[in-house]
Image 1 (cartoon, rainbow, N blue to C red):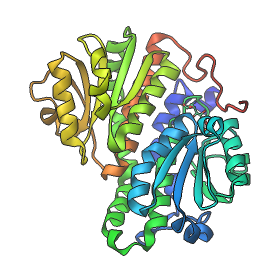
Image 2 (cartoon, helix red, strand yellow):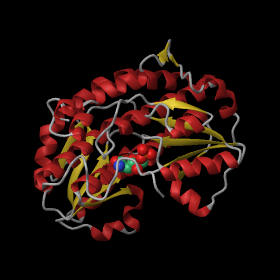
Image 3 (tube, rainbow, N blue to C red):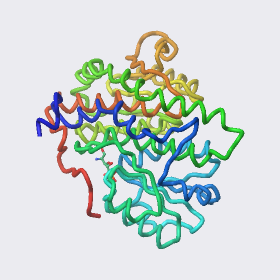
Image 4 (cartoon, protein in one colour):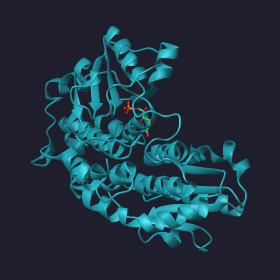
Length: 368
Ligand code: AGP
């Protein structure tokens, strides 16, 4: 086992640091001549373009990856996207139509809830697309078509490199579906060039490792941690909080920043640590005002911002700032999750918990 971990202490740590490579393999051979080539979808692109809606279905981190993809899938394809947690879709027996494209996201391809939701969508006649890391898995066999994310084997129970590869696979899927739209060619080109730069930006953000360890040591005794995001980075908030709760065994909630004043604001005091994701995108000025409202209630803030924006997000220097490299706005979630993965990892080690086998959890949940 130690040989497989190489110079790392834990699989989760290794998998976090592998991301420049895993993202490269996710994209290898698929970005061609300013376009995207996804062999597994080619035959079905026309049907997908004509569908009434895309329904994303998954659990846990895979659901969060789909949530991160939702805004750019809507933008690049013009198709409405709805989100379904697999178990909730089954509980409600929610409507799925033959005109739907149901996209199932699962690292293992063997999650029981996701597979049951797949059976349900197949019975209802939807076109079923699989996004998985496991060639030959039940998900990849039962879906009509799909994309393998090729992130390499993920061993740590906490999913890290699969999350970023899932987002990138779905970005390529959105580019392929939207490739017939002439008016958005410029936007697609910008995203494709962002994708090619992504592995080197990920290498850069991984240099925050020591800073995240230091931040973790300041949070070690906290009982709770809130993470506020919106727009492209709502999913980042949910996923960062999920990582902290599942491995560091600390209560943590990811929240929509737009919902802050509708309840969560009551929790704010000088003790509760709050991470606010405020990297540059169309929501930036709204996040600046969220930060101001939190500071005026003496909130203990940790703000994630784009490089060079420290004084723009925190003019009086009263919050801790994490500066990350900027990429195309819709790809920023791939960068922004990495400091939070590192934070969850270091918090776990410092709190003395098992990083790779958190209590009560299994890597693949094959029972309902
Ligand atoms: C991720 O850190 C979790 N261990 C968990 O939420 C996981 O993503 C979920 O169980 C879904 O697994 P899958 O991607 O293999 O379907």
